[in-house]
Image (cartoon, rainbow, N blue to C red; front, side, top):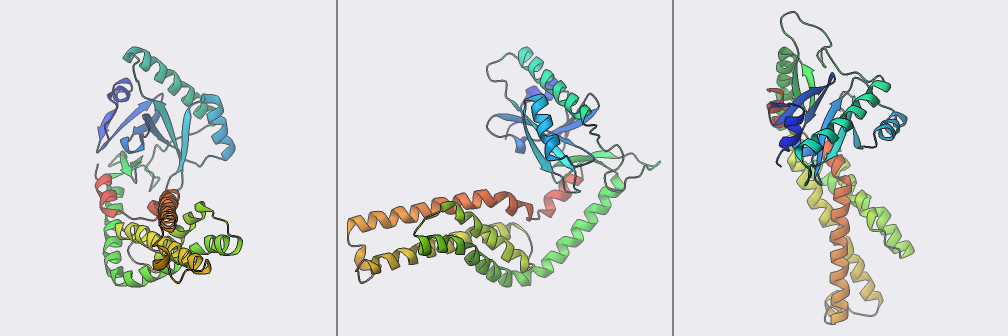
Length: 308
C-alpha cells in the first residue's frame, strides 16, 4: 500500500524499516501504511499506561477525530489517529487542517497526563554505553536498546526452534480444531433444529471454536494455523448445511436429496442455502480474524522488524 507523502512532508517523518517515525510537540508517533484503510491516514502513538474506556471517550469528545485504540503487547495502549486524505485540497490547506487536528490531539493527551517511554521499553534502565533507539516491535515503535533487541531476537529464535519440534503435534491440533469447530456449530444447530430460526452470525463461533481447539493441541501457531481454521470452518459449515437440507427434503417426502435435486425449485433453494452458508462462514471468519491473527506467530517478521 502506498504511503501518503503529504503526511511524511508535513511532519518531516524519517524512514524506519518499512515505516516512518517522527515527533510532534514532544510526542513520538509512527506512520504505518498497513493501518491505512478506506483512504484514511493513520498515525500510532504508544503510551506508558493503558487508557480507561472513559479516557477513550474523552479523547474522542475533545478532538472529534476518527480514533481507534489498540492494546500493546506489554500491555500498553496505542492510540491510532486516522485522518482523511488530502483529496482535491491544496497541500497548504491540507497541511493546516492536519496540523490543527494534531494540535487538538496533543492537547487531549496532555489533559490526561499521557506519557511515552523515554527509557528502554524492556529493561527500563539507562545504559551509559548505549541509548535506546526506536524499533518496530510487532508493529509498535518503542525505544529499545540494541543489546535488548539482540536478546529478544535470540529468545524469538529459540521459540521458533521449539515450535518446529512441536510440528509432530499438528495432526492432534487439527483433530481438536475440527472438534472445536463442531462445538462452535452447536448454537446454530440448536437455532435451526430446535427453533427453525436461522442466525447467520452464529457462524462466527465456528472459527473461534476451531482456533481454540488448534491452540489446545499446541502445534506451531504459524500460517498453517490460519489455513487450518479457515478450511475447517468451511468444511464444517458446508457439511452441516448439506446434512440439514438433506433432512428437510426427506421429511418433505422425497427419497433422497439426489431425487429432490431433479426439480429446479429444489435446486434453486439448495444452491441459495449453500451460498448463504458460504457467505456467513466468510463473515464469521472476518469477525474472528482479529482473534486468529492475535494468536498467529510470525517470528521471522518480528525479527526483521527488530533489526531496524
